[in-house]
Image (tube, rainbow, N blue to C red; front, side, top):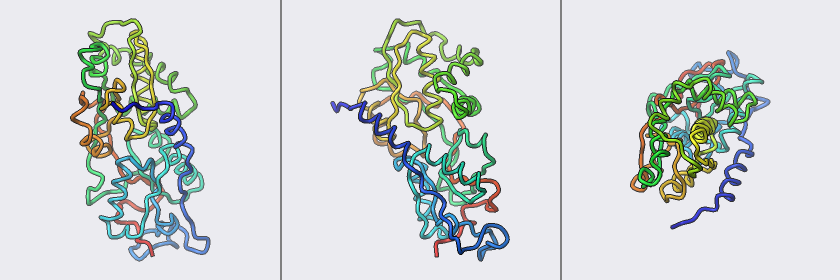
Length: 310
């Protein structure tokens, strides 16, 4: 069985967060946004200011693949490119653009703290390239129910809402350590947590390893689940990985599981690749969404309002 070098993979995942997102290009001699910068369609011609570039996250993410497909499916996105980076770098680029009131289009998703911090909107997607609502699912390795039934039961019963997740994400964004933000949320939501632990017996040091992709949403959910499991006596390790290794580690049985599977779109290809070698415990969050996101001050409402590269 393939063995993972977790230290190397974790370092690689961490290093990916230091990549600098490709910023919004500008043409000092070009037109500015607003009435003076309108394109032939009558909409503000932000596209040239953005250098015909969508600011993306990790190359393996489904939202990035969907954005790349959008550049092929939408004629008005001819010549556009998706600049991959990391979720952290994308958020940084978004914040800098908003601070300067510059145009930017990013690969976005909800739940995400950026929707609580900034005035943002999804661009309409008439061709439905990004699909509809998504679920975040829990996946565990085969045989877990027999080997560690209490871990299996708790993971199977874990379920919360986008508002729950965004509260933890905001606390972390505002400076709280992920583990501390998780503890605070648990203390404030004892009734909900009691549903996850219903019928779960206390254990004495049973080892559990959870993996997650280093997105703000998954940092929040994985830390919350880990803290609840620790309170039940589990010895929990959480390991950040890139998308592919995250799925492969569960399918190979090298780790306990993950609560970070975005389906059917974001991780659809990875699910199809590994679904026969892991167990799907169903949705832990409903109402997730992916798409192209822009600040509300941009006078565009649809992907079709953007201009093709000249």
